[in-house]
Length: 184
Length: 291
Image 1 (cartoon, chains in turn cyan, brown):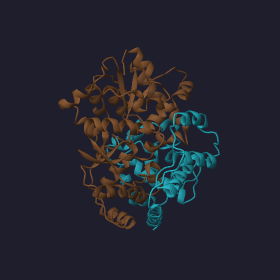
Image 2: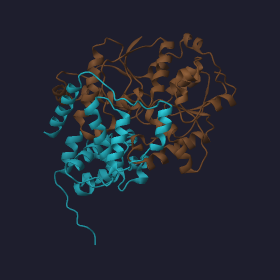
Image 3: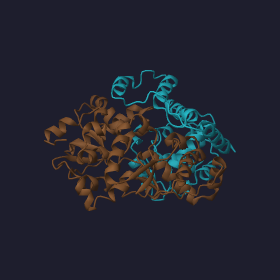
Image 4: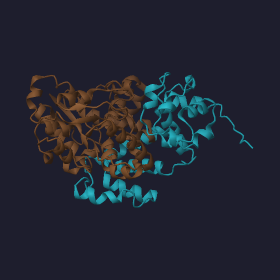
């Protein structure tokens, strides 16, 4: 039996407002999906995501894997005959999916994102070695890329000490302020 | 020519050879790189996935620092940093409301006016000058090069305004000016999988595998990149990709700055070539290129 789908009457307008993109003018030519390098691994193709947003089918969109698999390569935006910056739509969908607790079917991507941002809050610049260690710990992929560690250390391809910059407390305050504005 | 230099996080660590080779060729070309003091991370993809204001404030903070330096603009090495700095300029120039919100974060207004260049854009303007030819000490005539641009230098074109987004030529023109040959292949602007290397490495193996295979099929001896994430996917993961696709690739991947350095007569050690997974020496030896 087909699942019943309930449309949200305001979803399209909300996504358009937040992304600054006119999703409604998409006429489903499919060019975004034809050129998407990750399309083969997605559960919904990019043009299908756009159509579901138009229809207000919020639950389907916010629980799909596609928004988390999008590599932000901008091929779709470059080729869209309606000049829709699809990556900015995907960004809004990812944030909504997180903030509304839908949970990503691709567990590792949100962990990657929050670990990266956490690292910046701490150091101001990405501390690569620390980032990899914490990402592996949180994602449970403890040995990921560990085979490359000896080579990287031997070739001095990884800085072991974290970056240090002056005024890190100011950077932290700034990032917190951005978060507050985002939540308004 | 004095520019504010934004190296980006990777050039301090996993892509230190990109930094070394950049500094060598910039000095040879008379491009003065003045590092932005106390620069911070641009936020890269995770910032725009987290929040738009965050993704604008981080690059804007760096551009405000650069604006105090009285230079010709900012030179960026990394394609991802380049994309984020250009996006911040593009959005803040065109959206006064976002400008207000970012001003609230920074405690100071930034209007998107500091010019941002990728190093390739500055170098390509110098290749027709007679002094450029005088710098070339090594004959690369036998070398066939696949220039790889990837995503964020060329896309979206209204933001980066870099070159033709489907068939860019800037790197190819530099390669030819160095005396080497360029090859035509299909994957020069296809995505390598970028940061998915962490959360979804299988996707990177397929995407980067397709790119390497196509470059190889086109007869290229080496690939050239202008982004450290492309480099790590195509070089550091190449052995794993070979196993994954069952093909012996063995194609060295160099930063364009390293090829320029070789042509200018710098030794491989002066350009950090020993830091790569796939050794370039056998190719140079086979082509009887002495460096």
